[in-house]
Image (cartoon, rainbow, N blue to C red; front, side, top):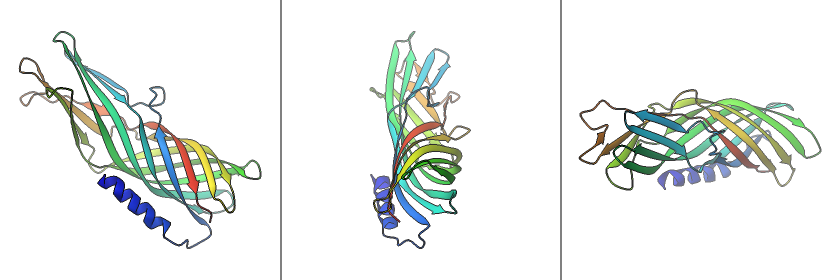
Length: 236
């Protein structure tokens, strides 16, 4: 709640800033993350001895604000601040010992992107947009969650210092002079490497995994995902 309140305060603050140039516009965006395995590499299956683990992304989303500065009739630069909430389900299975449990948890992060946008006018009000760029991402904290019973838990450890991701976007924009701009598109977020590690732990007194005296095993969390993008830019 504190993180979401901080984002809301930042958005209100930017809304109150007077534009210094007619070439700069301010917008808001909402981006549901597509959970399909075909589009999302965050599905992970790992086995350690008799134990198997399955990491599945659930419905997730991102929202934030955008500043777009027009360079010329063809190119613009976009930046801003986004809050990303990625939700997961982690399942543990050991059929020989009749172990089957799961836990839900969410990873919160902040993203500062910078992108170069180019657009082509295809009709009086419609534009085709393509953007490429990078972003710096910082995970808010480490996360601990528990299964349906306390014998199973997991700790997600974030990558210190954050990580860099490649961004790519394509979409359509409907522009009006007095009512602002309306945009729909899709984006790729590619982090190149893991953004954190999950250390699952199980102990029911008879069976254990990743106990204190054992060498720690972990699951790498990929940071790649695809979103649907809904944006609104205020009139200049």
